[in-house]
Length: 189
Image 1 (tube, helix red, strand yellow):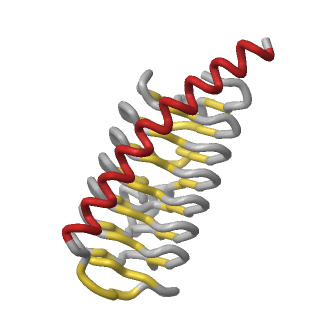
Image 2 (image 1 turned 135 degrees about the vertical axis):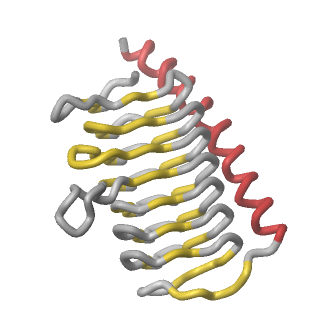
């Protein structure tokens, strides 16, 4: 791991990070967090699994400045609200994810907010700056936007292909950043 990364256990639960995942400097990863193969967590993200679990699947990317949290069990919600992120998910810069589910190949645009119990199905997209309120569900191939978010239109095959190109770009770019940071760290030594 690079310098200036906090990885901390709390309540007997420690983060589990796959060796091929990229964690950028400035990140804070606390508690019951699992990060899968070739996933990337970019500069200055906070992932705090102190009251429930957080899972980030293979090749998913959590872009700069994003905050991910979860919610505790309570009398109305016995399981609470973990944050579950599938594989090949794109999460834009400065996103807030709280107690939600992003299925495989979901996309969350820059600065968007996804709240407790909300779900973005596979190949679904929440537009930049949007607010997905508690319990809402974005269907497969749907684009939602606005504050609060509402259905806008269906996504084209081309849009879905571009999203997957974005996933591949972030996997490759994470390797480049990881290599650059090792070189810079060795030079500063």
